[in-house]
Length: 217
Image (cartoon, rainbow, N blue to C red; front, side):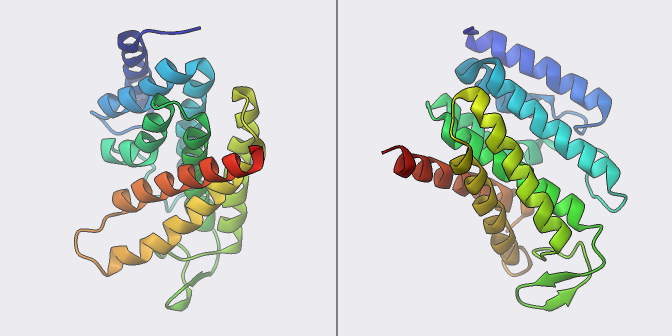
């Protein structure tokens, strides 16, 4: 079923407004959700829109279950755009594989952060052993959460006729890239976590697209 562009944006805005009421998004974030959810609904149909909703729901539940989470009150508009806009633009430009790789990256990174915060210790690439929750640190529970998040959307990709492994590996690669890019947040003034997420989801989408092309051709 093909939906008009205006209808898709309106539906996504309504869903974003509901997400605000549920506490999944911060107030005044529905406009961002309209673009992040509306473009996939318009370009990819219901399956693509469900992928976005699954990402938001997964992240919200993981945050609620983590008492240390900074996002227990929902994501801001900038967070929504940083995690979802590359994927939305990718499918609008005709690449469901890029879309899913970027979404898988966002899910993997979210679960790595929220699950990893429960670990007693973590490892930082430059500092060595650190407390869990430290920016750019890696833990075993967080890494397992990362893999689960990426695989979940790899399997979801079957509903959109896309291969599992390029999506899953794109998500894993993008999430690890997010960790490395996170090192710059402490060293470059103006480098924010939103910028890190924006670049990481883009890289995850590109990796999935490139790997998918190599496997198929």
